[in-house]
Image 1: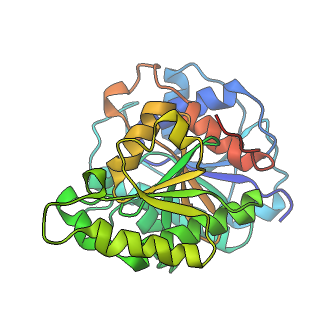
Image 2: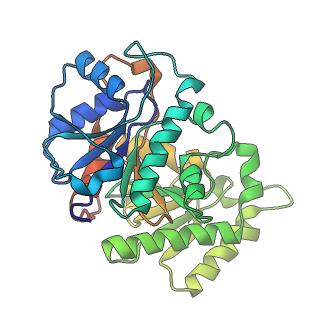
Length: 328
């Protein structure tokens, strides 16, 4: 591997991704070459729409070692996609295109040419078709990974939901000592490997105030004993904490990661605090996979009003030495 480029799967062709990609490229110079896996036709349609100009370096993914990649061009692997208009309504039509895009990226990673992947937003409902809870699970399956975690990363504070894209009524059935411990192991390993320290992790309760009037209380029966178990293993953890106060400034500054029991319990407050200044990192994979922390945003197509910050942070994360973390 001579340069370890950043692979970017553009994802849903009818999304805001290429708009924010153009804005990201214009915002600053990145050191790493970027390989964009995308429809050439869609790329040129949207370059014209957003009046973006840059040199395109067409690549054959089977001959990547023969190219001298640079960071002054878009290094493009074309995935054929038949679309006449710049934007169309999101439908199942794009599913095969997205699948082929991922398959090319996975082959490149497995061949050892890159270990850095960013994917653009994807309509989970259309692409996954209820076969996977999310893209985290989809990619993990392709690499035969059974244990994974979704870390929403900000250099000041990150969060991780124990359960991901589940209905609220199903969450309590999935909470267990094993799954909570699994997420803590993955978070701890990631921070130790990438940032060279053991993170301070706050574990939240499931119920309001970590209490329940029902006969069965997950906080007492599952979460509290799991915290005790993990403390014996010398992890820097505490809990269970009440979700309604943990994100107060004086509380959150004590921790590197807050581990919640379900998606909105931790993603809602994090996005309220940092808005687009966060990225979605899949833990447990043999490479780094990141996605901007937002969806296709069909309502914003073509308006040139989308914020590129999350994608900029994703590219920055893979582009340079690991960010120095600081607390606020």
